[in-house]
Length: 430
Ligand SMILES: Nc1ncnc2c1ncn2[C@@H]1O[C@H](COP(=O)(O)OP(=O)(O)O)[C@@H](O)[C@H]1O
Ligand SMILES: [Mg+2]
Image 1 (cartoon, rainbow, N blue to C red):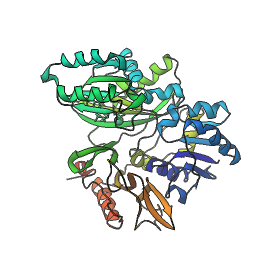
Image 2 (spheres, helix red, strand yellow):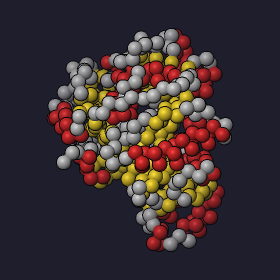
Image 3 (spheres, rainbow, N blue to C red):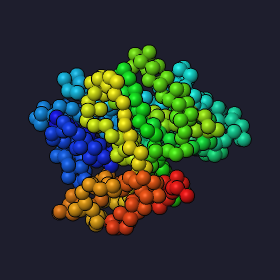
Image 4 (cartoon, helix red, strand yellow):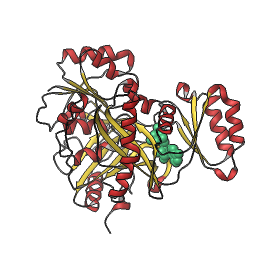
């Protein structure tokens, strides 16, 4: 089969790497891809927004592509699956209606409430309700903080603010409704209770009829060690999670994940693709934080290396409604991912810095280098984004995987590179 991967991050490099091991793979294409993906796929620079869906379809026809896997959320929310399927092409990724589960936090929160899926208590306000929202905030008890305020629509991970005081919450409300910092995405908001706990994510493969959970993972959002500094797209991850036992896993699946899939069906939404649950655990009880409609980045990079199934077969079967009685098989190895970011990230990022130490590296050992923001310039691999590289190692122990990662990083160098030193150390064996 010839396949097309849409996207340009570490997630997509990991997908391409795993798919390249599939039995039925012929050629892999990527739009737009990056310098790492280009080592295993033919990359073409085309925009993947709605206006350009017709050019993507033309590309698919011209290159005899049999199946397309959509990496990022934006084209899914814009309806790329409906568009390509409507033109007779098979896709891995949810329809526009189903992708609302990520595209609209208001939709998902209301859906969760009416289907008794546990989560934070929430209040909804539209832009023309500014005064009502202000009054609501002024009525909140000072002792009840923090409160969380969220933009309804996609905001690249920047649309959620945790406010520790009335002043902060009122300022945030202004950012949404008066300053319009989030544009259309912020025209409706949620103000919800803060849940104190630890987070995990669980990505599930769906074919419209069946949902198959993959092993959970945990990621690190803050830029600096010990969860200090600004939020990022994710600075590291690991899987499996030794602190999630079978009892807790069962609660997550039976109270949140399975009822979601069944309720979507009942409400007429056939979900296929990845359903990614963002879960928070408080006092050993799980609560839903959010859903994403695609593979997580950098969670994918620690889950797929442990998966023993043929990924192409799995994704094609999911995309075409044919998972049947498929079961997933997992390696017992521990997997850890450290993200290397560029100078200035997450506020800004620098482009064009030459990356030393990875040029001739091929992903053939227990340590993998996935490219995120990279490109080629005059024969050099250079930085081209905020998150630049993902170093991913597997080992019998977390200690072993951690050591392999940081040993590999010692050989990598570029101007202003930054990474966290504490990834997965909390689960390292004593
Ligand atoms: N109700 C809540 N209680 C505690 N923390 C929250 C809550 N809602 C969101 N958060 C925090 O904010 C982060 C981002 O929120 P999320 O809903 O996942 O939005 P997104 O990933 O789209 O930015 C979460 O990972 C979590 O750390
Ligand atoms: Mg999130």
